[in-house]
Image (cartoon, rainbow, N blue to C red; front, side, top):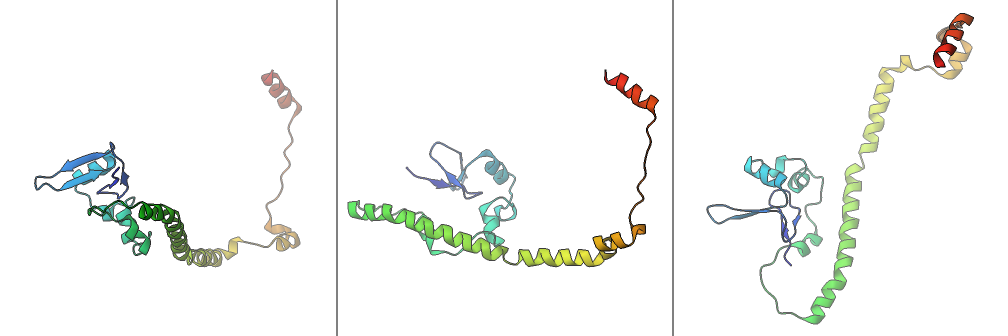
Length: 168
């Protein structure tokens, strides 16, 4: 079973799925769904469309260089079947997948490392600009003129009887 890659978004195209477009020069383009095919027909660049794998790689959102990607590469050279080799490959696949996942997590952690400090700096800056709006609760207790006056509203007996009649 051959799993192809979508030309536009680089996702996996399973057999019997997607669309195949053959250009006049016999170049074959495979698409996973009509969304990718339509974007291709509109001559959009996958590196500029935010949801594609190409965009994520170009803008540093995903890993680009890693030795685990070597195992996903397409090879068109046929090899003689060797039972021991096939067994070793099947044993290695989970290990390689685990390594790739840990490296992706580390990459994401490094990308997000500066975000917390940036959010804190922005919060401090906003607080400095609007410090006059923020008062400590102890100051409010000491000086009651800073709080809004509490108003008591009296409800007449007639209005409450009308409301009671409306509810029934």
